[in-house]
Image 1 (cartoon, one colour):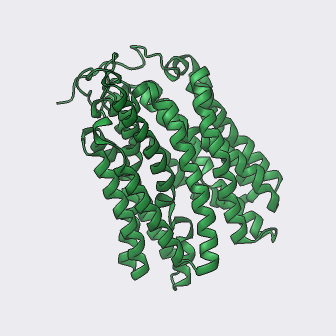
Image 2 (cartoon, one colour):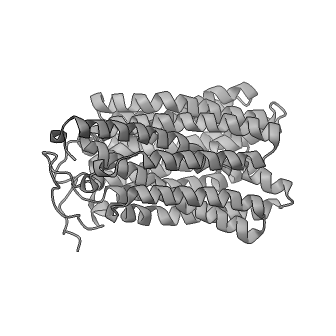
Length: 426
């Protein structure tokens, strides 16, 4: 589909973009769903803490392993809408399955299925977006997608908290299922012909007609120096960021300065509300100054967050601590997919790249709770926050130290030495 096809095609693209925003809103709760409440739900049904952690870890590992292969599947598939629909159905079914049985086998299978579905849906939505609006429109549309996604998280968290308080935790499962149904309906509203599957994997030609060649080999990911630096910087950031909130909650509640339920609800709402604004700001900054500055600001937010958390262990401290999380994570939610699409433009491996970056982020995030918890146990919460925040100093060092290489790449200027040619995939 091209701009030369007239008003009807333009209307289809507009309809597809609105459907994408709706999809991102509803898939937020479909992805998070019962997740934040799972431990409490299982604890109420007689589970011990150890098995709860084990099944949650199993899901996390499954999702991390599947993310990069999921991106490869998205690159090759011409049924991207169907993939989103199937993953949505699996998520809904997995949620209701846990309502019927809380056996170890059922809960573990449910968590693994949900994690695999989550690994598929991220690259799939990014690919559909790129296929609809192409490279030139991806940054702006992805920023809007992320803003709607964060809005969905705010609404989902608020509704989950109220429903859980009013009707009990099982009501949250039904809410997740309802959001999943609406997400599936949103996908069906996207006209299939508007998705250019060559453009969706980064093979759009310069004039917007057809595609520019064959996909390059997977090794292109390892040969792309800016991609490797981005991955390393993100791993360090998430190694420090993921544990910050749960540890801060433990510090505040443990000190008797906050109610656990109210505190948890506030943390979600504050961070996600800030992310709505920062997602939109990210695309504006990137359009004018490039992705390098957006990522620099996002990395700088974590050391400041760690310092604030160490100085203010009070209930009201959730506002600055989570606002800074909204800035760091919110900017990245919009910037990272756009940056990956830019760095891998023309390779045909955009969605593999998206999956690979999500895997690296997941690796850092999965290690973070253990690192943070042991530091807190050995030397205290305040020191743990400072150490966790300091991991982003490595991210900043990488980002500033390689600025000469990263700035042109992050601004969309492709250079032969940063994105080398590779043999075509067979």
